[in-house]
Length: 377
Image (cartoon, rainbow, N blue to C red):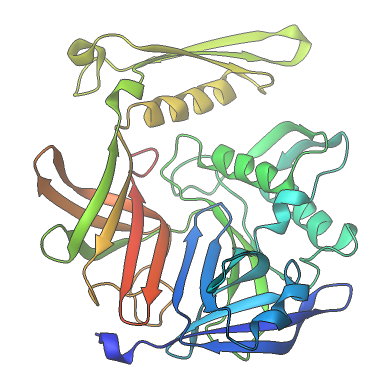
């Protein structure tokens, strides 16, 4: 374990270099920031902040670099988080600088108009979208990012048959949203954990960043997060009223064909025998055939039965390392066992880590994994 006294946080800010916005020379380094926080999420934009006193002579230097500079957050000499310095808020005493992960530029980069793929595997579409974000759109802030592994999602849980979309069209759509949509399609009604990521080394001297797209990357870990043992507090969002047990799917196909498919759940704690019938229509503007419609409707039905939308676990000091630390023993997307026996909250099951937040002051560090039920299970 790492004791409180052994934790040391530093922030290094680098200038961006050239038309690819590569990581350039360091501008400033802040040792022992007053407050610091950073977070990463599956298939979404990471975020971070750090607080510096206005009296620090390096604060004024940063103003002209907000929006372009690279940020590295180091914990005990290892990189825990990286992204782009994006904004700040200031008072007479302090400045809070905010940064967003390298997924951020995917939000303001758009697809082409009427960009179309026919009978294409999902990895083919992802490769084209990523190439547009990295290369085709010149002066993209992702120009320096390396293309890593882009896998082909498959049609069944742990299967081998690539997922082929008969038609996929986008019109000036945010590339981030297109990638999120494709990961949702790839997950479908399977237990596969599909996600994209911007990965990087823990070495502060290694400036490389790599884009990956994984078809199924998840491990069930022998880790137990239990309230009263290593979990100090928790926030549970339990909304069974939002659940649905009768999904009515309708999809348009080629030659003006119209497909319909229905999924109902009769038994169990969320079945209509227990809570009453709760219907929800799902309309799809295009499906290849009835199999496509069934796949999507089954996915929506599986998700509609979940009651625990998400659970945030506030860990006890030194009980869980941030996931990018060398010996954390888990990654985002993995499942751990969550046990909470506290009044209305009764949880004892494997749950997937979909995000993690870390907050630290000069004396304390709080690690907050965010967990959900795994889709398709």
